[in-house]
Image (cartoon, rainbow, N blue to C red; front, side, top):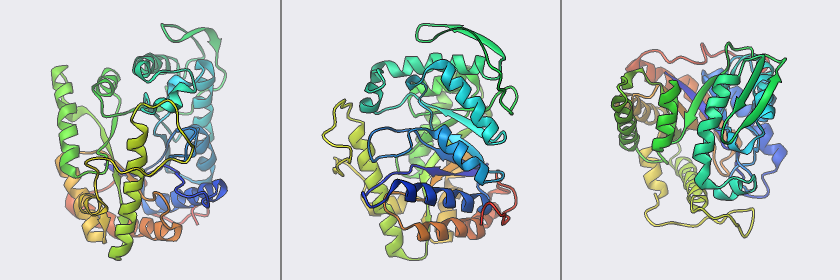
Length: 361
């Protein structure tokens, strides 16, 4: 198994400028590569401060040349928002710009507000994404391709730019829903889920549901690659750890607010609205790999053993967490946490041996 760094790139305050967030994100990814992380994940969201990057492929193309070996993953591209031939070309070109290090994560989306502005209703996005998965699975890497479906109709088209990866970049499926599970099952795609900041037992419950889907289809759940998303921060300072957990609660509040199905917002800067049954910062601190290296390692080992995760993506920064504190946390994860995990579960793959490179300094 390996670890990834998850870059939401949100802005809690207007003082966090776009150039600042981009520059800090690049530095954090370079530090993660040096620390031995295997994948850097980029999101796609639109129109609010929840996440500022509208194109994960553009971020992958920006960061790829500034790193050497860490893979560039999209978590996720929302294909329903794209024109088919354009997205096909963007993916293959991004694989070249990242020198064959692109992972294509796909999802149907959950924010009705952003989907509506691209002419897509939340209720139809899942079916549209199913067809997009067929389109991309069949077409990526083909020199000549045509597709005629309910939502996508593309005449015979020539593609002169090949992806470096053959036959195409690996496709991951993100989402906790039964539709996402079936989507992954049909194409033997790795799954990527979130426990919404809760504990390893919550993720184990999600894994059990996915296992049942696999068994019902006559498939062995152990053949599936299963990825998860967690909050993570390495620090010996309890106040600093609690502050990170409070920032995580901020992100959960915004996500919960955007899951209400609204298609109109009063402002682009979202309200931090408490909701019934929400976690406290103390809950997040207790349930996630946040704290000193021993605590972080113990909780990640618990997940690896209970959930059988083959990849764990980590929110290493969120909200207005101090950049220098994030950099210290990432470096300590590589130096102190990974060796502790390896003592318990064996070698961690992905990034290879941590080295200091010119690009990562």
